[in-house]
Length: 132
Image 1 (tube, rainbow, N blue to C red):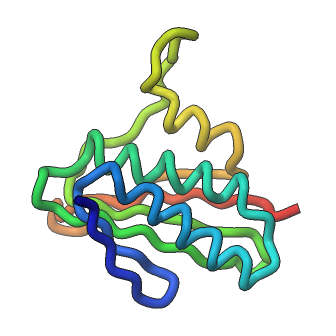
Image 2 (cartoon, rainbow, N blue to C red; image 1 turned 135 degrees about the vertical axis):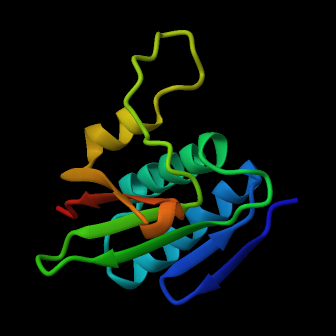
């Protein structure tokens, strides 16, 4: 069973893909408070969190998702996990059901990138989305 803990504009999820729906609900709630359409933010958040849970975390590691606003009003999202493995855009074929996560993020984000955490403690993958 998925588990999520919410603090301000941050949600910590346990390694279970079922929690991705909770992350989408969280994004809808926050985006609604800012009067921002939530379709693209929910899509990008889902892909960021799914990618972290599927590829970047041991079964007992938490993944932290954060959402905020930039100075110019764009949405900023980030996912923190405990591995140093870098995400990459894979060329997904038309049949495959996986492999599109970072491709989708790349298509919808103004920009995205990766920040390593000090001491090989993991990384943060971030994306900035225009709201208009």
